[in-house]
Length: 321
Image 1 (tube, rainbow, N blue to C red):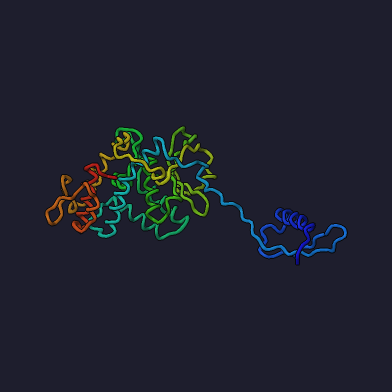
Image 2: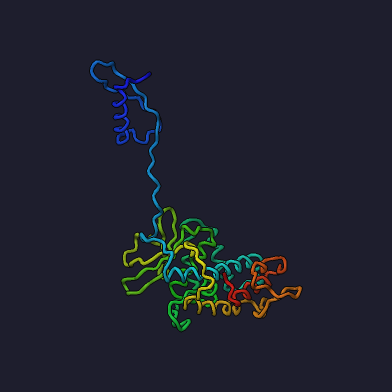
């Protein structure tokens, strides 16, 4: 039926009131009676169905932090990513042929595979427990003779020792390799008020909650359950703010770690897999082209041993990106 022009304002008013009333978010049509002005017959109005949904909320970060895209810590984390990507390729080759796999990579891969077989909180707990047990605590001055050195997972596992950020980096990479997405992982720097010391942990988001992986405890707590720390910053995948750092000198900690990275890994490789760093050669006698590292996985080097050593040769030449 057509509604008189004098009734339309009343209908509109009823619709506005309905938004704040019990019919908000209704999934089905509602029938209502409208009291007409004097002199008019009653009217029966059917409101079309509508659904009001709240606007999506932005993703909450652990401890209420925002992801850092710049600054010394973000730069250090970003400059470590090329070496981590190199190690990811080594892990892939280990899956192809375990006989050429460094023992350190084999131990790290075993943790990843065990976690991959689990799901949700159990996966996170498996990696937190296994990494805590695989690495013994050792300070950077005791290990490197310098402070605040960030190591890659395979470098840490080859040494069997590390400090809090080394545990955290290994857990971050292990969780990612086990199937978790980067957007559900954060490397978090805290200040532990109990001992007046900065501390690194990993936050993993499971079912909308951030679980904290800490080398000082086996139990998983959420960020809201930890009240003896001051959160300082959170780091994501290391690629939040892409920058051209090709000509940038590495930070001191990263430079020292890079100098040790290849030597530690090569020492950990099985003797049968060792080839001189000065130029790993293919079976056809050609030297691996460290300027175009994609050739390490190309048809020229099908043998996993040669591929791994080609990657190490490229790393030794300083071409990690």
